[in-house]
Length: 108
Length: 119
Image 1 (cartoon, each protein chain N blue to C red):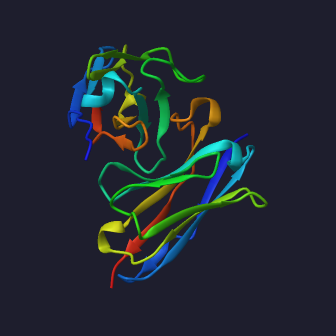
Image 2: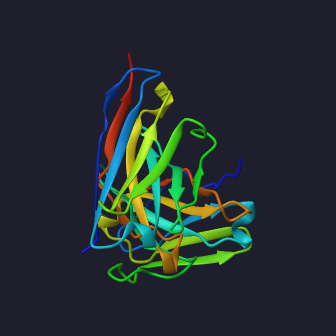
């Protein structure tokens, strides 16, 4: 079955930049979506279609794509950005939704 | 304002059945892409099933043949019928909504309902 690969954890100091990667063979053909999840809460969409930002999401969140890897960048990280982040995409058929394993972002 | 409210979770023995419900407000389930996504304790998100705006459905291999997704236009509710439950189905189950114009972007999520499969 199709998989998306994320690093388990990323640590960053306040004000610095956090980059979270997500790799998968079909990412060159399928869009990626990113979600933020804080403990005990439902996920929140922070990036859609690789690089679009929903209304209400701070500008410090951005997304990019290159080949079979997509990247979520958090510029000027704040303490409130400490959370788990998940990428989402679809397999090569475009039908089956897949989530990455998640990346825990720790703000030092 | 779009809201999703799940219900129906609880403790169930292996082999048993449960029916989850997701009541929507502020939008129409029949013009949205509605998915169920689950999260086992301490684990990541796992997509379970989707019902498209046109009514067709799709399932993850892990639940195919055991789970059935459906919807009721009159109550604006989406359901997940879960049969032959296994211990590995234990999770918080979220329903999530993507609008028809951004069919893979799940902007809205419910608060989740916990399903525990244990004897």
